[in-house]
Amino acid sequence: MYAVVGCGECSALWIVEGRPERTECPRCGTTRKHKYRREFLTTDDEDHAREVRASMLASRQGESDAFAEVGSFAELDAELETAGVDDETYLEGVGVDTGEVAAAADRAAGGEGSRSREETVRAALRELEAPSETEVAGYAADHGVSREWAERALQKLVRAGEVTEVDGGYRLL
Image (tube, rainbow, N blue to C red; front, side, top):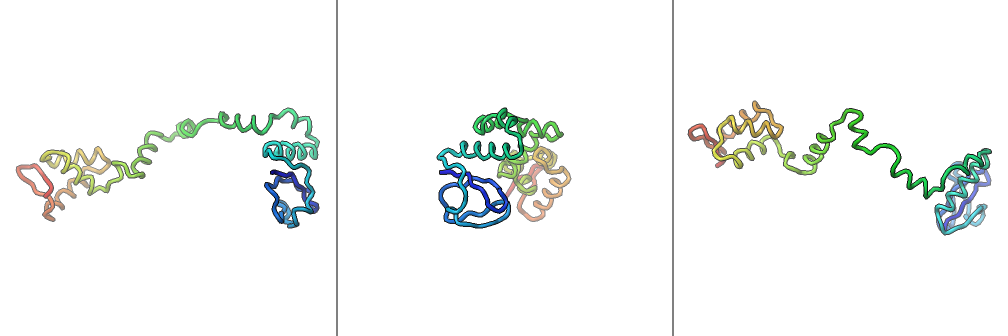
């Protein structure tokens, strides 16, 4: 049940759901027992309560004719879904590459691109068969890690004994 109620102090109108023990005016903060608030309408339909409140506010401002031309809240809600532009169109309009945004979101959500730089180098060693330093660096570059960083990381892994180099090819131990 919804009720359009008014404040005796500041004349604000608002909608109250149910039958609360006390209500507080959203404008001036006056708190009263709900039974002492003036109820202009009580209905089971929230949209109807919204319509009545809006009509009363328009009437107070002398805009009853303009209000009559506006559709119902249900119609306005339906129109809202098709109004304006969608997020992707807006972002592209201001110069954001939505493909890059989607890729970044996938990486952040734990997709392939969420690996650390070192994990990317290790993945190259696992996925490529006895890759050369150039192939590891190329794989890393394709996955967002600089070639220089990948080459240095590969040398560190060799010095740490985690990777072996045989005839220019590398593999994890």
